[in-house]
Image 1 (cartoon, rainbow, N blue to C red):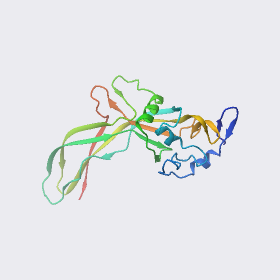
Image 2: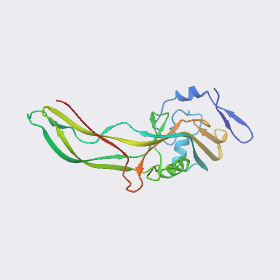
Image 3: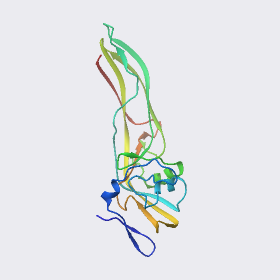
Image 4: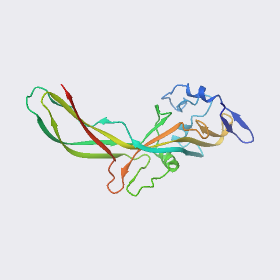
Length: 219
């Protein structure tokens, strides 16, 4: 499969898509390529969009869905190993979740405030009257729990946030040619290589939407 990119007056043929995915991610500097899977013979569109080096950075959403994300431990482990009696404990547990940006579900990328605004423009808004998501914002879920730790066991609280998953691609325009072209599509026009995962929150309270879980196990 060939990816096609257009310059002014001609088409540019890129390397096969599978080859692009094999190029490792580099944390890099301004002179190094930090767009994962892109290649040193092409502009570093993520760095350029982060630093205002482009005329346009537009995110195009291809598909999106909302789902319960993986569970994360939100309390310390509470041990009741030496006692012969159950222990009851009341505490407040908190989980904070923010937007995560990645390439092909695995390589996280950093996004600046101005660039996150451009990504937000491309993410479809919530249709619900009670919940929403806003790219770049951080939201918190807080609950007070009364927990029973049986004798000879340990326990902890976990939290799974609801996350809005968006997948698409970047359209990037330069004022002058970069590697021979004004327009670049990262990682390919119509692809789903750019991922924006945003926490879902309740409109009336701003509280992060999700589920707390209590678990115990033997010492």
